[in-house]
Image (cartoon, rainbow, N blue to C red; front, side):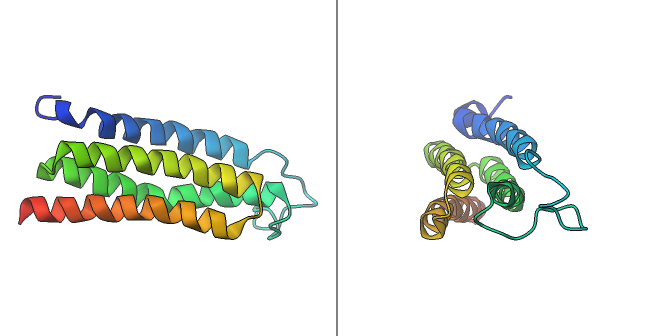
Length: 135
């Protein structure tokens, strides 16, 4: 861990993101039945159905995992400012938990998109800091 002590919050955010992803994966399978599932195994597209929204929340989380992990690790390895790396990684984690809660609990797509954008901005900020640190 030598040299990474300053990135404690970012490292914790990466670890907790793994837990959040696993929990979302377990939640995504709840309530699936033959009646509400397509032949492909995924719930039928219907945002009024919480089973579909659970599956989409999990899929959306998986889509953001690579960019978040890559950007966070790149920023740390590049030696970007620890305060900002920690802050952006932590805000990303909180925003993604909020995205999942909004996605699963409501059909409010504008709110879900707004909260999703917070996480995207965090990832883009981490990418920018990684690039800036190596220039």
